[in-house]
Amino acid sequence: AITSWAVVACSAALAVLPVKVAPGIQRSVQTPAQWHSARRRAILQEHPGVERLQTRDARTLPVLAAVNVAQFAASITAGTTDLPAAVLVPAGLLVGGTLSLWQFALLHDVKHGTATLPRGVKKDDVLFIGALPSLFGYYLYLRHGHLTHHADFGSTSLATLFDSERPDFEDGDALFVAHRQSLPGDAPDERPGFFGEAVGGLGVSISRTIYGLLWSDQLGWAYNLLLYSFSMTFERAALCINDKVVAIAGWNAFFPHKPQAFHDTCATFARVNALTHLALLFLAGPKAIAWLFLAEVGWQLPVHPACAMFVSNHPSLQSPGGGCQPTGSIYVGPWYDWLTAFSNYHTEHHDFPDVPMWRLRELRDEAAPFFADEAIAGARDGIWPTIRRCFAGRQFYACSLTGVEADK
Image (cartoon, rainbow, N blue to C red; front, side, top):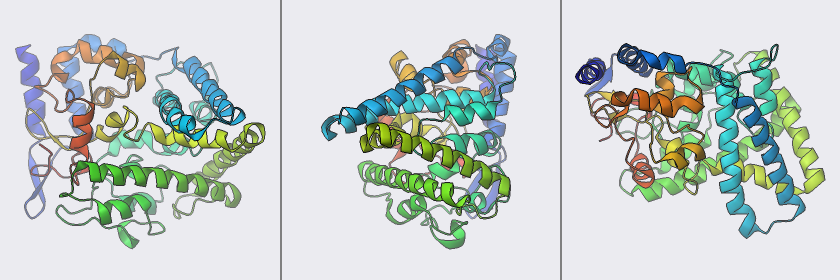
């Protein structure tokens, strides 16, 4: 155990070697990805048995099929039974939201190659089919933005993403953390840019406009939480409308410099998605579509317990061993693990992306010293303290800036 603590301390110490990036500001020599690589090496050195957890799991694909069937059935039932709004809204946010989170988590494991697939079946085909039903869905992010997130998170500005000529996003997570966190290129103690070159692409962003103009370090966490909830809901609705424009035009205007293959992929999924929506509308009416919208946004809002996981997974926390901690887990209990499809083990996932979701808790328990309070911060704070921490004021994403900016 003493050796484990020493390795953790050495890994943390490496993270605080500073270089100047602006007056009074220090950035870690290590990138967030390197921080996790150092932890991975240390964990394998102290707990070599962890390596056996890196495998494919046969449960993922059948559970994904069951989850999607359940979501289809729920949306059709919501429409055909004409659920009153007093039932539709909470059921869609909580029940539908949980199914939607499970869909995302299972597809995420498919993307990482930790799901057992039938011979000859391609991951991208499973991502495409498995992302239905949805209103906007997770296909675009998983197809073009997730694996690069593991390599580059905490290092890309929003403008870089929207102006990029690459077929894949440099860090897909930056597209949705912009609702609640500052990004590389933002200056501390200054209002983040939210228009024109500061955003890139078309020069407009719902998330950045609300975050840049209205977030406050003085008005408290509840105020910022309400702004975030409005921003997430409004932008998700706008994405659903833009998705229909993409289906018709065959082009996603928010990414004007990306190659045609990217736009073809976006358009193909948008068209299939639109046909699915038309079928649901014909079979069950508009409340079936409303169910899918509520489900897709539900687990990201504070009405759902999973929100604490979603908003806390890439903070800038002071690591107990020193330096800045770019990833957070949240341990509430077995019920929370199952509710969130084990996505609450986010530090574990970035340490070992090849461990399937079903075995992340086993990873945590087997290498326990590396996930104790003496090794990582914030994991045992609880749901509401975590939410309050995340919305206390403007904070940087994934140690984009470290040192004085790391949250206490």
